[in-house]
Image (cartoon, rainbow, N blue to C red):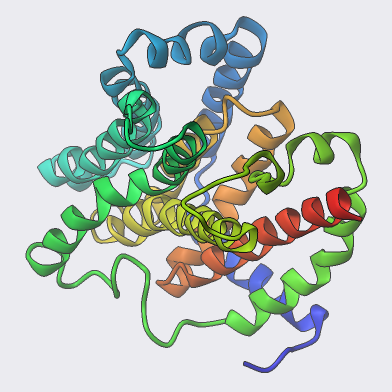
Length: 319
């Protein structure tokens, strides 16, 4: 995969996003989406939507149904009105529009809302081993919920969907994505010296463990980082794979805006800057997934950035 110039990489990727936006832009739909997302952000960060209500459902044992309803409400709060604004009566009359995206959203809500694994006893294991297994499962649970059902859908009703919901052969522009990531590395390194970064990274701190199944430190660290990377694969597979590539034959380009609102909502427990940046990141990655019919670029950039931040966290601790 040859590295190309940063200027050419930016032109390639920006060109795809601009081309998408030109063809998709509908003033009423975009204004409505912006107003709804802004309202949700204010409700969350000003009035504690997530911290005072949504998050409590995990401790009450209600998250398995609260999260699907919460996410489904946000998705269709954008999806249905924007179809009305665009006068897409064919889409609105299609029952698949109400079934297929809802299935993906509900499944994600159930996966994230599943919290019972935190109470698994693992009586034959020591505390550190049990805690480590719970950490691994927290990264793998979306895959456990999604992948078997997606395989069944791909083999039956979704044979025409490109690749495995965007995980396709011969993906376009990977060299541009790689060049863009390499250009970001200096900024990631600089950011790693900030207090906020040092409080958050690395996500996995091997120095807090002494005995994990007799493994060496580098072995259980690598095991965690592999599952951590897998979770980013699932994020792209769900949001840009199932909810863009997987529904584009039903919704076309209008699949992007409800996905963006939903993607923003999963960041409500994080700092407001991260939630806002997810709006733009979700739109850009969604547009690129639509234009290229694959999600490899998003997977690659997500994992490379995440692992770079982990590595910088390790460097700062062990220096």
